[in-house]
Length: 200
Image (cartoon, rainbow, N blue to C red; front, side, top):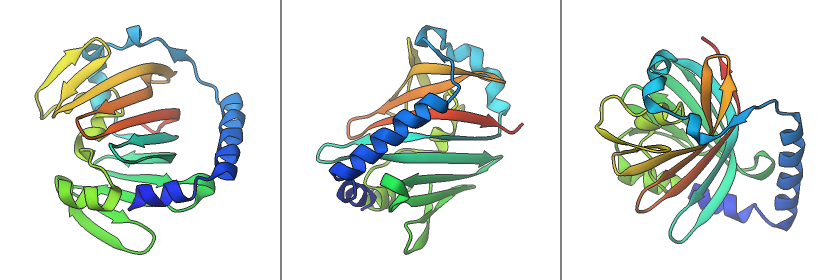
């Protein structure tokens, strides 16, 4: 399982190196972080048409009996996207290619196609499940337009997930998420976007 590999490579030395690199990158990143009071879901409808973007950031996953963290990048071009998650110093990792209705997951040894709604297979491959089709919207600060949701002070509830935006950052197309917390009964997932690149 991907989480177990990351955990096995994150010893004391790895943690020190990661901490140093994060401190160094934080000093070089030009981000204006805004308070979450600036997040208003109804003000974000224009971003639904934002189809070409990418970001670099970090991910932390907390499960009932396990937890791990790593670096993450995501490049989206229309309906297709590529998510890359790797452990310390780029060790291990997985690449997820998003296509219409399914995902292609490359764990470094095998490349397997799954339905984007195949929860059991994704849990087996990644160690947890998050609806990738909805996540394409969530990372931009949007609710999935095809699914009912309930708006909250810092985000919304959708598909059994609480989606919270703890901080926002300024970009050329307006405020975009900096810290995103996703929680359901089985998973706590934290995303930190260090830098957005808007290609549209």
